[in-house]
Image 1 (cartoon, one colour):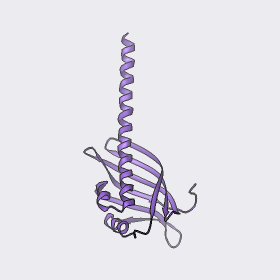
Image 2 (cartoon, helix red, strand yellow):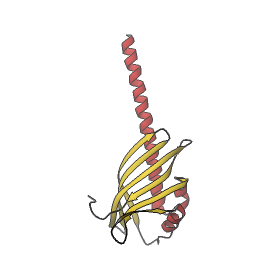
Image 3 (tube, one colour):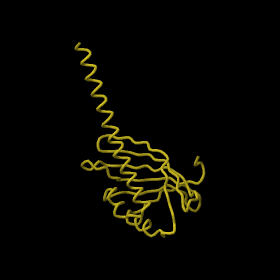
Amino acid sequence: MNNTRFYFLVFLLALNFVNAQNSAEEMVKNTIDSFFEAFHQQDSVALKETVSRDIVLQTIGKDADGREVVKTDSFSHFLKSIVSIPATTKFEERIKSYNIQIDGAMANAWTDYEFWVNDSFSHCGVNSFQLFNDQGVWKIIYLIDTRRKEGCD
């Protein structure tokens, strides 16, 4: 009888851990989804709510000579570029998948995406988000992405 209780207790603890992990993953995913909802709505106030004050933004792309380079952008410049997109321009970043890993107050989310402008494919790539759990609220502290036009299957 004692073995049965022990195994049942172990099962309940494992189940509780899995549920807590899934809940944290959902919270991270919700932060990223909120970021993109605000992005698509060109809502700078809502975008600011999803990120840390000291967020770092980078992108990996090709320069004029075709070499891979890393470019860093300030969040204020990013916001200005988003809100200045004309209302006649429809843009959408479609997240294709999420791979979320969490260790305590740190999370990483790897998201494949496609980017569309006025219903035409523009490019694809991957976003890598680093998030910090700031007193129960996940905030994006670092975002780097890749951009390419080929190999987007």
